[in-house]
Length: 218
Ligand SMILES: [Zn+2]
Image (cartoon, rainbow, N blue to C red; front, top):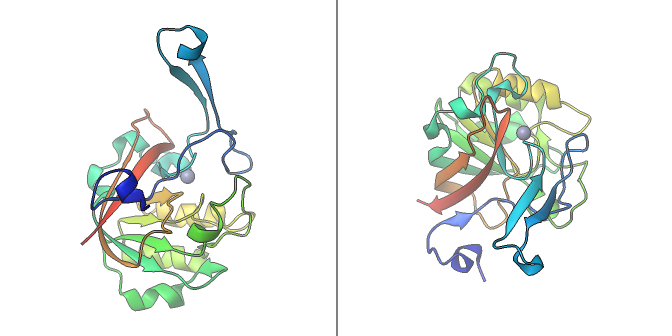
């Protein structure tokens, strides 16, 4: 059964991760725990959960202030950064997203681009953090900044590589005002043109916002 039919909505495809206790997170970020605070089964009048998690849990959008002092928080993100036409680009490289593979796509200023790598099939099958996920090379991040794309989405928990170029890539993108979506699951998505809706929750001066992200083929 497809995700869309499971949700009983014909055209939209859910590309968000399901938040659950024990799910993978960046190693030095808080672990994820969802536990009952009030509980019908224990005689309370309703169910209410207590959530323990980091702001960069699962599918989320980074605030520019995640790596940039004085950058816009997630509550200041223009809504059209993550609502509108988006291009899903398939990446064959199993190490990193490089300029050579994205240059032929002729990205333009204002484009929203989501990179589908092997991560989508490979990294979400387990709750352990995958260290060798496909990330954006520093050169490719600088290229995306030069092209003045609007929004960049990736299919694992960081645009930069683990113990690699996390700082450089975030600085290149967020420092250029590019909005970054992390933790997309694009396994059900073929490369092409889509309508994107991705709305991060509104945390005051938030360095990120957890988000539901959905795509509809155009
Ligand atoms: Zn993040």
